[in-house]
Length: 388
Image 1: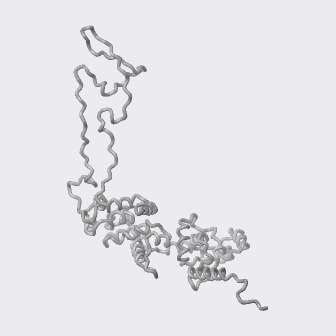
Image 2: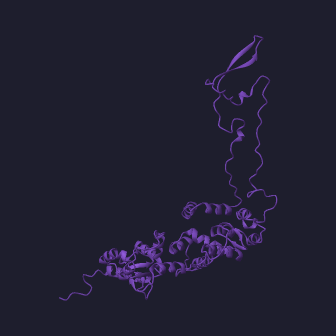
Image 3: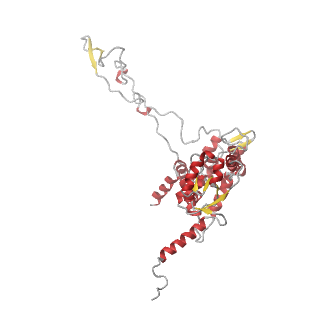
């Protein structure tokens, strides 16, 4: 009797295999040759000795795949350039290695961590100098400046999927392979006026050694204003446009900007001459001290403060003449040693060091201050507790 079609076939496994193949095809750019990550060998001459943030990149590869092909070299070509590694390369070839990675060691490590079964490659067979080519690749790869990154991040946050849902900053950071703080600081730059945005770009150009500037802080250097991303996002982006313009004109100092940025937008104004500190709610006036009663005629200050022992006197007890009593002559009175009191409390109780003062003018200011002090995961945990 002929066997019916489909018998003894694991249809569920076949569907899962087709789905996995379709998923892998989506994660790999079409039109490029691909290999398994296990068939690639890291170059022993790789200049990047420590690979950073592999887990973050692996999470990004799991969701969006590898969009940039790794540059690889055939083992025989690599061995011709680096004969000192020929023995190690031949041993790896015997284990199934097909290519040696030239550019993309961090992507290879992340692909292995993400469990990708295919990765795109670009094969180079004629390279004048592998080391010079590696230097050229790193120097020629100019990334987006912080403001350009901010625009891209914001547009990605504004996009909606087929269900009309938008990404959160945390989800975007995970897919982009960076931290949520990185995303939030970039997006905050979009609240800056054009002059301060350019100051952020100038600071980035300086870090890329494309701009000659001597200042590392907010301000002008040789007529060029530079502003670090973190300071721009956490201080100046919280100022109103009018206050930002005042800073550019020099009417608001950097110290004043830090103070004004903590206020709600409707309360922000230029500091006046009467402002002695960043926070007017903290007074610099002297503490009110309670005076001690004046000592009576025959009393000594020893009742208020312990008398120091004379040098060489090992006996803590001492005797003191207390005057005459009933006309019978001087009398000896034993004075018990007083227990040592903490420093600052021997004269008045109000001499203790004041504790820290937290001044909150609005709920918004409190929330912004908390976000600055906590890590992103701690902020999310706090939100969970508040919503519970």
